[in-house]
Image (cartoon, rainbow over all chains, first blue to last red):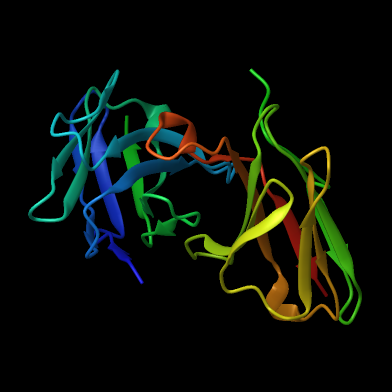
Length: 114
Length: 116
């Protein structure tokens, strides 16, 4: 089974600054998808960004971007110009091409300091 | 835009009782997934359905069963509830299409089950 590792249980960032959340994964597959989900205190799971493994270009969504290093099996999330509303638990997730289930990391709790 | 709907949002049951959780996917989505998230845990995959057929099975206890109906909504039935079943249960939906952006799972708000 695939494993997803988030080695930073907690992170903090000053408002308006930039923060990077780390994620590594283990797989023998060549085609797969990677996701970052945000879970605020409401516990809703909100999609932040997705990346297809066959795409070399890193995905970007407004202030959120990823650094996808396929050979290193690394998928970090960069949040620029951090806002108070970014405070949440962030989960990295893996899904194989043709598979159904997501494999989640254990999450990184992000605190934004005013 | 319409999102995944889950009901009820909160449910309190006694040990050994049964519970039924409902999930209404995003319109046109044909695949439904169930996840269980314990306190301080990451979501764990339970089971999924595509076009009303079970498509994948994860760590779902034998006491639980689920199905997807003709209108694509899904129900998770939980019997002989145990204290350890207390958790947040997420439903997610997607539109099947290998290699397309529509494979993304969109999560509902979750049902918080408390077993006393």
